[in-house]
Length: 273
Ligand SMILES: [Fe+2]
Ligand SMILES: [Fe+2]
Image (cartoon, rainbow, N blue to C red; front, side, top):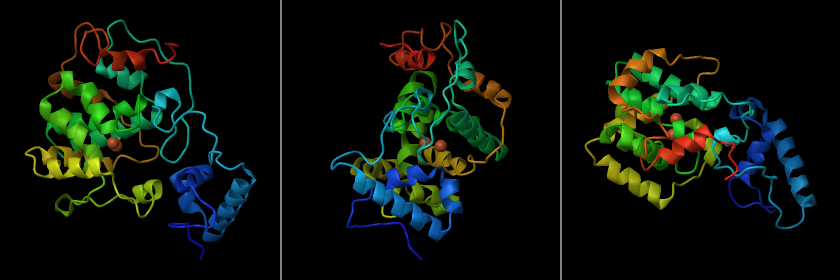
């Protein structure tokens, strides 16, 4: 059996770029070893044809770009860019989830909140699950920090803290709640991936924090939020949002808060400047 390259190769292989050429994680998983080996060979040949220093894959948009802006999924797939609905004059969180979440991210956050609700979690945990990855529509890099900041003026300190720290916690198992390192991350980040020192530091400080479990449970429900074809409506969460999300009366984006521009950027993603 020929495995994917893990370490030194005679020809440098950009593992992520190579996997991205194959398609989704499910497609890669379904491939036989021989098919993978063939694909790898074709990929390596294509690399030899490229001038030295050329990127392994022609990028149309950088990987960290948010999904609403055409940023690729971790497996390299791009969302289809469709016409966007006009937002109401004073848009609410529900409007943003309905009209400014790409289908992939919208489904994921709703499934994760649904899992938390079904398992009897406190309402703030359900809300944290609903909000945890919404910012991926805007930006992907350091999404825990960006996501927490975006929600901070409107939720309790505990909810934004939990959103910030789920980014680091997802790399570290916790058997007390049945959280294992996700198989998906082995495919996305590679088998020998070691989180950056700032991620490790964030995890270590979170581990000792009184709200550790609030962030941890986001990572737990996250595991149950990748069900293909399972649609979850936003309706069961409307009352929870009403009780725990301080909706500004001027509308998100127009309330003069320090993060209003983040919401406006999602509202007007096609503005040139
Ligand atoms: Fe996340
Ligand atoms: Fe997630």
